[in-house]
Length: 92
Image (spheres, rainbow, N blue to C red):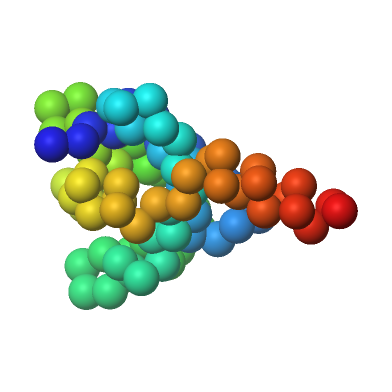
């Protein structure tokens, strides 16, 4: 199982996190599709900012034991190096 080492909110990109995974990859992950049901609280930008990595579960978590599956986030994430490639392509 893949684990999450670090997660940070991406400024000015509502609902996105930059996540460091246990295999060394960094990925941009869009959390908005998960913001339904009990996770609807994540639509509040102030609450979303309270994200942290649960030390035991090794996944992204918010207060109230709101967490997401690290394997799913890994599958959905966009590799940082792929984002950099896209930026370079758009410059040319």
